[in-house]
Amino acid sequence: MQKFNTVERVTVGMDISDRSCHVVALGKEDGEVVWENQVATRGAALQKCFSQIPSSRIALEAGPHSGWISRLLSSLGHEVWVANARKLRLIYENKRKNDRVDAMYLARIGRVDPLLLSPIEHRSEQAQSDLGVLQARESLVRCRSRLINLCRSQVKIYGSRLPACSTASFHHQVQGHLPGQCQSALEPIIDEIAGLTEKIRVFDRQVLRLCNEKYPQTARLQQIRGVGQITALAFVLVIDDPLRFARSRDVGAYLGMCPGQRQSGDRDQQLRITKEGNRYVRSLLVQCAHYILGHFGEDCDLRRKGESLISRGGSGARKKAAVAVARKLAVLMHRLWVADTLYDPFYQSHRQAA
Image 1 (cartoon, rainbow, N blue to C red):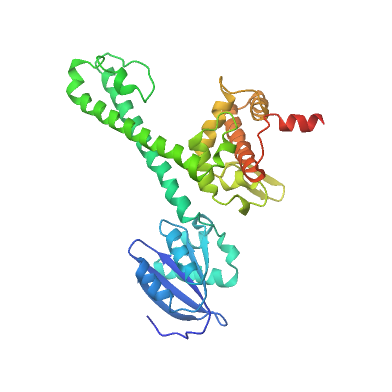
Image 2 (spheres, helix red, strand yellow):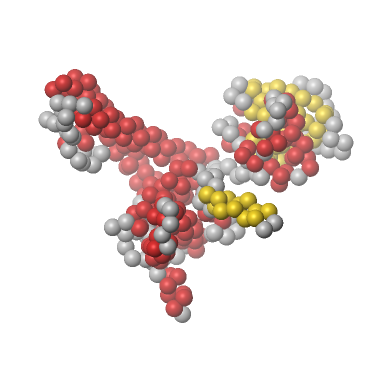
């Protein structure tokens, strides 16, 4: 490490990769490079490096390592800003992009105005750990679906069909329906599907335990018909701290379900939703919206809103209505969580009638 003044407050930019971090520090007064360093992306190495630096402002990009690194640096007394990488075209579209230049840009932006970094806030370590349970379960569900699709496509080659059934009972229902020509190939697959189904059941019990013991607020969200334990728990874990949103309406934008905007003068284009934020929670909310709008959905304000949008017609009206209902559902779930109140399916209707 180059020598630097141990009492001088600096602005630090960090470009993080799997193996190492390139660090550039700028002086507070003149913005000149005070020191540079390359540190291994390991907790001990980062702690040794940044414990020698006085409390400073540090800017880094969001990524796989940014969560634990930001928590480590904050514990050392530094002011940490995690930049939204999608907002920094200055960096990712640079024609002369390298680790040192990226770290330099982060430091200079952080020195001028850290809000230009479009900073994000990482969820807590405990919430991230519990969210891993849902992510692991989702990976197993996807693997099982692909294997089931493989089995169904293979038997069609021989003019057969497997019976329609739920994914959980697939390995039982297909017994005796496999053509002789593909039994040797598919029986190991069926056994693997059975094993995955049992592992998914284990995760389901773990999800139930988390909802009941650690996150009782999920019960409030499940008052809404169509919102189950997995959706409620995923929503709570991803939002983590509901009070960081000044308005419940901000949650829709946070999860990427609000249309983008490109307005200039008299021109105002109609854009698709931004799809920013957590894709897993967004997909769960859209699934809930499809249920609310489907045959088994009960009458409520959310369903009526979706039906009014569908009645307008147009290209992909039902899909657009499902996204709109999902956005309103996210707002409603956040409001129920913050207000700690009972769910009224016709709250808006009663309010308009009054």
